[in-house]
Image 1 (cartoon, rainbow, N blue to C red):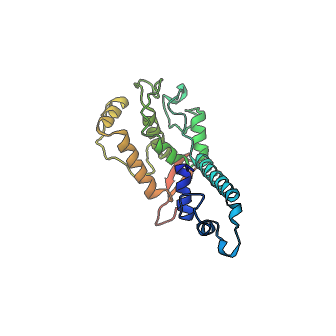
Image 2: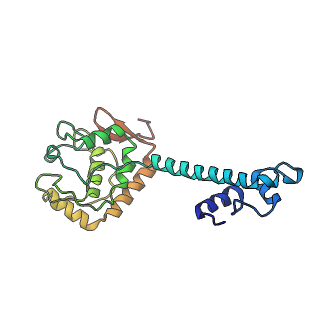
Image 3: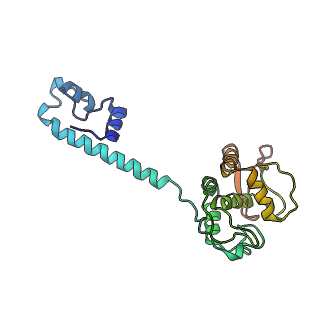
Length: 224
């Protein structure tokens, strides 16, 4: 009988066979872990056991697929960002300047929010409304990058709590002009790659400073 390729692959990995109904009693016994030469698995029960094995395989595959779905993190609603209170000043995580349910969720998620935001940097969808006052529209991936940047700025708004990912010359023009110049030199894929490298190298050192409402890195020398 025809075998679903996925099931065939599972059987090949699990038992070393492709067909769920082997041609000989000996092969079937090998699949089931018994020796039919000693009468442990009568040939008359082959079809019944075949159905049982198929059912178990299907259940295992469905369960694995469901598990993967549950483990897959849900992205934040950045492409539909619409928040006037966050446009003028402060960091995104400063609730007195940015009242946002999305940011509240990001802060509540803590460190696991970082790889989710990194995964969203390549989202090229345009956000309908401006994110900052006097700025043109930006893409959802750019917003993810900006939120990540703010999450690693201390409460003085002057000091970054992580090494610079890019070493750019100071820009004294309007913010949106500086950003446009930066983006012209660096693609979203490159922005994501730099953040992914940083995360991979430092994820075990990152912690949330609740007082400063920012992420920091543990100093390997002082452990602080």
